[in-house]
Image (cartoon, rainbow, N blue to C red; front, side, top):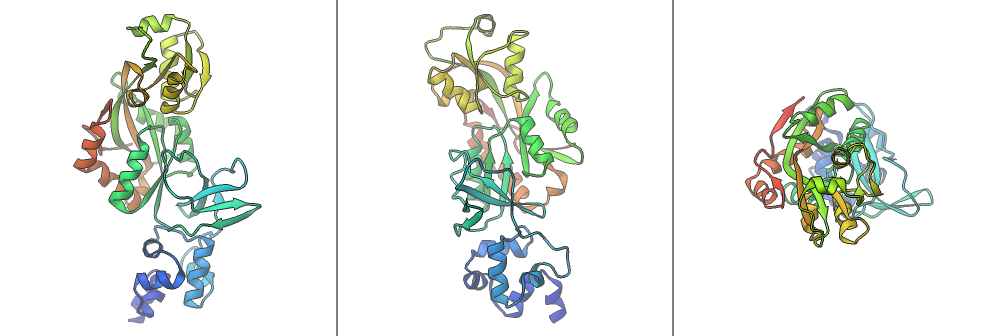
Length: 352
């Protein structure tokens, strides 16, 4: 009996030896039952505070609890990238064997309470539940809806970092996110997403199809232009995405050899807001963002939005929860009801 208990995960072994439930251990350590479950299932690396609390409950050292019989995991969290200022609120998530801190951003997409505050070189944890967390970089303006449905369906949480396709893939290459969104594929070039991944990343990856959407030009409602060609010839002020993004590529193709005049903004919603507020006369974004801002929209092309993740994460519970959600009929219907989105192939996986 003791051999069987000792052979399992150390936190679980010590809990079973005391005949405690996960809820009882959670109460003694001052953490959530979900955190206990995730740590025992090795889906979550504990923070320093949590590791010390568990070691105190079991009356042992942190090294005995998390370093015996397997490679020791670093307990000290690291910044994924430095915060812009102090104090800085942060989220914490596990990527591989590392615990990473992410400065809080894009609260419209992430109505997730922060996990703590960084100030004067000290991490002050807020006591938020240590839920298994999936970190995604994507410029999908409806990603907040995906995160909300993911949390509701799985009990996990999703952090959405708004980034263009090539930047998102670079974060994936650096192992700073679990999932990267990209939408370079079109009806004329259906394999652009796969080709982009092969060019920018090395290793074995999967593409999880999220949706197809309409990309086009957002215009103020009082703009009476009826054709894309006439817009391309006119000297307009543009709201432009960053170089390397699919929307910027689309704008550059539209203008040909001419450089755009205007300002650079981040994200589809920011393009639409710049036009709505009068800072720009036109901008390339998806139909969803244009209609959300009450703008006129001229379609240019249909793009495929895929989510890229490493093949070795396909059995990770966080990825499995995402795949299950995209296969669910209720979510597919929800996506198909968004302006410009097509969910016919949502949930399909492409092996690269």
